[in-house]
Image 1 (tube, rainbow, N blue to C red):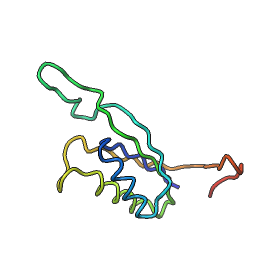
Image 2 (image 1 turned 45 degrees about the horizontal axis):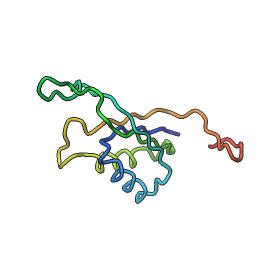
Image 3 (image 1 turned 135 degrees about the horizontal axis):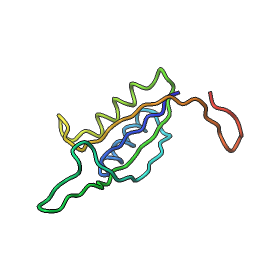
Length: 108
């Protein structure tokens, strides 16, 4: 299994979640986060904002299914046709084990 973590603009998270739902990926965890990317925040006049609000979306998919939700996230989260700085980042990592708490069973 693969854990896909997408950091997206807060105003885009509903669009991304809807696109994932329509693509058949209904289980999504959403967490509000703050941070900055390699652009080191936003400078407006003398003030630098380096804690930019974003949303962290997490889904777990089968190894062979990871490319489609990644493409879906990119298409839904991108600003305009070519995207813009601050649109976000996607991280993919392996999930070694997962358990359903209510049943106490291991997921495959």
